[in-house]
Image (cartoon, rainbow, N blue to C red):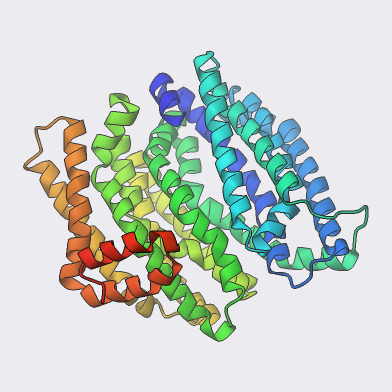
Length: 469
């Protein structure tokens, strides 16, 4: 859907739609963070506790939806263009639907029923895709994307209500409410800061350079969002429930091990995407989006620090160190604001370059928080993940050399396919050549987690990589 609209619409039109989605994603924080985390980690799970959380979210979601539709949308339309107002008003019900199913999602997460949440995500994506394509070919244009998101939110909420019902009654406990607010307020504020830290460059770009510049940046960052949804978000969701059951003295070791496994599996995909970014953008989005290629490359090269940073909130929540989480997020937004303010006047490619540097710097500044709250020394963390970072960067460099020399005159499609094949061979080859013991340890840790049906294949892959016993 994203590709179809990008190819059909002008840069300015597409930028307005993306701005509407960006704004609604911000408001979604208030129905996804804080309360759900509190209910997941709490030892209590009785009727009073559930009912308090349910009614708080239901009423709060309704008020927030009304505020977006009646107050915020007209103001945003006045600032960024009249077309933005109806988009935001149409998307506002997704906030209420998310709030109304918060307790159901919390119930599934606290009991490790991730099959339900996974199926909910699948239904969400399937409904969104099918409805969007139908409306697109019926001539709805940008409204196809807007209305499909509303339909998907409704479908996901209905699925949670049916698959994970929770007992609620018309009762509200002040004690539970106060506990909920005390726990949730720092998380919400830190998550708001984190969102601004991640999106401040886009917000400033839209304000300073206009919707067209935002559109180029969003197209360049789209593959990063897709990879994060597919590869990182499921791990982050499971991480809170996992860290919450790890003894406090072992939290640092668990964080390092999970971070190492995550980077080992995903970095070749991110760095490989960075290497083929120019051809990828031209092939899928069209020649008019060529400037988005370097944007995509810079954003994906920030993957190592971004992935490490994505696990920190779950670990700090599990450790009940929400004040540390707030400070961690405050540093992130100040760092993001610093780099965005420097680069925003030079266009989307410069902003993307700043976005590549930003997470590395903020992670270094936050090293004391990691050590004090989790017992993780940044140097030890870097040592643990360095084999995968260096192998990924080596793969990126070799693929780019191939594209710029041997394949310089090739057409985009064959050049991209051959580049992918080369990268797929180079990454494991570098690991086997320089870090074979590290690879061996990783496979030993991952093997018990592999489903029984997949273990024969896993064993053959491990043997082929020379890392099996």
